[in-house]
Amino acid sequence: MNNNNHFCQNCILPNGFLGIKLDQEGLCNFCTDPFYENSNWSKKNLKEEIRIKAWQNWRETIKKIKESKNNIKYDCILGYSGGKDSTALLYMLINDLKLKPLTITINNGHLTNIAKENIQKTLKSLKYSSHHIYIEEAVPTFDKLYKCIFLNHNSNEKLITGKVCDYCCDLMHSILVKEAMNKKISIIFLGYSPDQIKRYFFEIPKEDIKHKWFPDFILKQPFDDDDRNFFLNPKEMKNKKIPRILLPYHILDYDEKEIIDKVNSKNLIEKGKADPVLTNCHVGKAAIIYDFYRFGGLSYALQYAELVRQESNKEDKKLIRKKWLRLYKNVAKAIVHGTFDRKGIEDFFNQINISKNKLLENIKYQVERDPNKDLILKNINLFK
Image 1 (tube, helix red, strand yellow):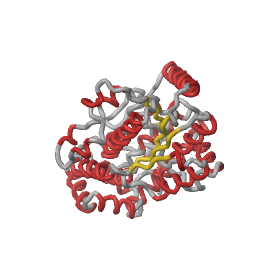
Image 2: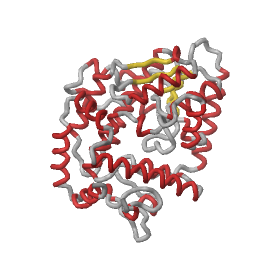
Image 3: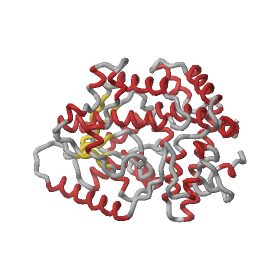
Image 4: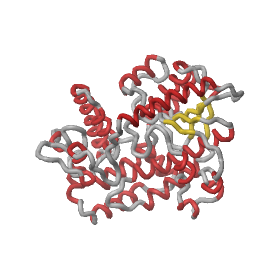
């Protein structure tokens, strides 16, 4: 598959994807223009003083937790997904920082079996199973949310992956906040990696938590009061004391290889089962397929490209780029040949009662009317 010249020579973004163009040197808009952005991604150039301030905030927060002498059983909550990052973060909180986290897994109804296995193995290895809550009461609400988004998405610019992930995360985080408030726990940690900074950096603003996680469309059918109760209603949150939500990996040293080696060596996750492709839920993978056929590229390429750009060491950057470009090509080829998480995605669409074939027909209808139709089809055909 000799199509390397079709991808940015500095990151991994393909020519023509979402209006991205390569110049004569093979560099994309994001790599040549520090201010370039589109409706799906903007490059985050955080000033050093912001990072230093966040680092100081982190140290002060940990110190404050350790010095606290309240009688609460847990001093923080960790949103635990079974992926490599939240697993490594759990180990650090318990063993390095000597904290007492309550681990909470929100089941959206579409976790992969490997993610579930990782959760069980990690908790058993750390002898921490009794300090874990598995919440799955909101599965019907998640399904309504996904169905609403997949059936109503219609844009020539906006990826469905970002949209479905944002709304899903808002619901998951809302449930975590409610658990924290009920248990009087003031800190929530999430294992977001450094490239996951599209919306937030290090700490989620409390104003967003109070006012931006209750979408207007849940006021209509098919959502009912039971569904709405899982979300944070701004009217109910008024004058309420809410927990802080911190994203530690945004300021801590982060090396993906070291994290994978750590979770493997500590016998938390079996070798070969820390790959995000294996642990990311089936919803995200269904959205990736949707966006690939709708826009001619992998939605997660924007995030992976950010990881490549963030690497300052020239030789390491080459290796990271090679790794993510290989993954891009393998996933794209698997999508075209129908082997990408086939069963998981079929189960997902069956559970939310959507016909995958009809959805693909709708995508084809939109592409036919898209001004970028030729580029979209060209990028898809690269992998046939």
